[in-house]
Image 1 (cartoon, rainbow, N blue to C red):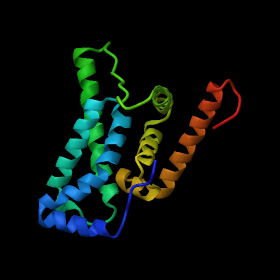
Image 2: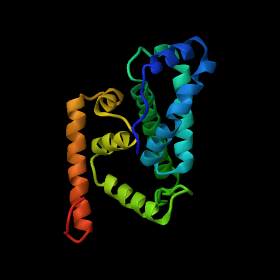
Image 3: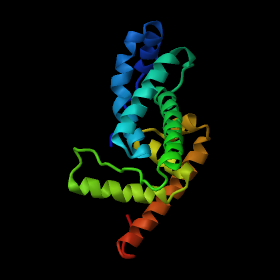
Image 4: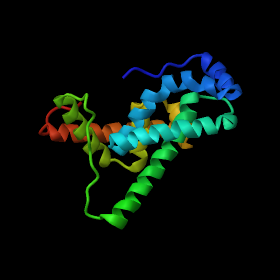
Length: 186
């Protein structure tokens, strides 16, 4: 995955969007893909990821006046994180209220090839073995954010983010080595 593009024009784009919400389109175009991927990894449902991505941008548009500078992706991913948590809580409530024995559907994207789908299933299974904090840090990292931006999005320090990421990656490497029959690592 390539890192998100960042440049000096982010501040200019946000100023233009605050003055005229119709000017929010370049920000949307730049971050819709990474935000969707983050939501998809966290929710494991294409429909819910699409809803979460849409809700994130609706909330961002409504909150343009609350943006006080800093990293645009960190601000957007903080909104996405809250949106995903709300959806997960609502989904959990619905599952326990209406169908406690119905498993959550895990649907790979239609573009995924067989190997990519297998890798996605392994990653999902491996992520579920991590702590919630480790899962969150890794999914934000996979979405393209750096440690400082993840820290801003989650309310942690960059050092805490790096420590969580290190422990999570070490655990995933250990699990991968075990799944390879105890052979080599990642």
